[in-house]
Length: 552
Image 1 (spheres, rainbow, N blue to C red):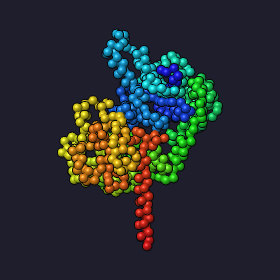
Image 2 (cartoon, rainbow, N blue to C red):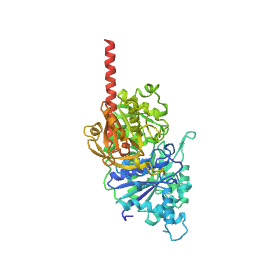
Image 3 (cartoon, one colour):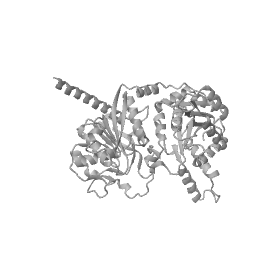
Image 4 (cartoon, rainbow, N blue to C red):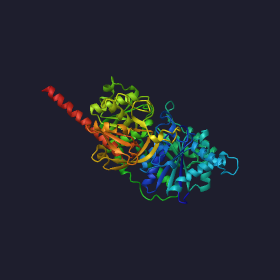
């Protein structure tokens, strides 16, 4: 660890889903705006090596970094807030910790010693705490510890944090504890007891929090703050209110108003340097909350019951909408519900259709119907990963007349495999971390629609897939009007398809949503939202013309 690196640990109590990731990202943003180089890392207590093999219903989306790490969705929040890429080192799981320790034991690194949680597991965790500062110079590293205090699986992380803080001193290590101050309707008041018990649990592990951040639905009065400070052994100015916000992007303002950044820097014995300039962030939130217009986008997917399954996509749409001064009315459409018979009812009032990524055969027919509806009705279409492959299958069946056009993922023996498993994937049997992962180059065709969006001929985008467009069918598709507008220059993999005779119909094998941030909205999402708004205006004008003719 660099002598000047400061560490902030964020822990949670009472219940999960309080928003440790948003707290960490918001504080990091404030510290960044004060002039400090800041990054965030997430330690997850589950035993999976990474979330790559987890069902989206179980864990939400799997976020992918430039270097090909399959990570927790909180890393998406970190990147969207900080506008700085994360990496493999920013997300660590218990599975990865134990895997490393066991490998070292097998190699004889411990010289025959009995391998135990303390010191071997905790030493490995502490090494991962330091890893980011060894790879790159940071002033401040915020470490979010997943789960809640008191969970059995979280104990090694709490112990490692206790040791780390003792070894490096309180001026280098700060503990922020996020907890809940619930409002009991029957009593008509906020209750501090859950927070007191949570802090007591942390104290039993030998850790005294420096700052309490209290999630609440109502403002916390001064007397309750004083009570929390007294019972939890913290200064009064270190009891921070974290009241519910209308959008996660409002949280930095609320925490700045509570002086969280000032209290944090004072405790770390760091100068304030400069006042954070939140003017750009304020303009973004204003447009997000009070847009000049609206567009209705249908997100067609198979995991729509859990919106976190498509978190980066929904946030990329919101961000692009705000930068276009448009609100996004996102319609969550389950692909299993879409049929030829009800397509008009489900999709007819949309200004844009996005077919989401995914794996497996369930819901595929509904996605194909959605792609066809968008193509034939000239509705702006964006297909991501599987969404691109769906567009290829639909075009093959209904334009080229390839009645059995399919992906070998769904129909291994199809005689018309327009989507096929990548050659290097065919011998792979292990599931975790073996897909085509991370950022790859794409050469963009000049004057194509994707080129007009990016204004570049060479781009780098992140991937997560095993199947690809089958180049054996490429000539037939191109002759029928499908443009292969993005190609990987090394593998000749088709990265982007679009239709020349459509206002906006684009499919990407890569995941553009992973690179969209508040400060740098993704150009493809900007173009998609803009096309959706044009489609809406065109339809309104057409409706006016029809009504005028009827009246005359």
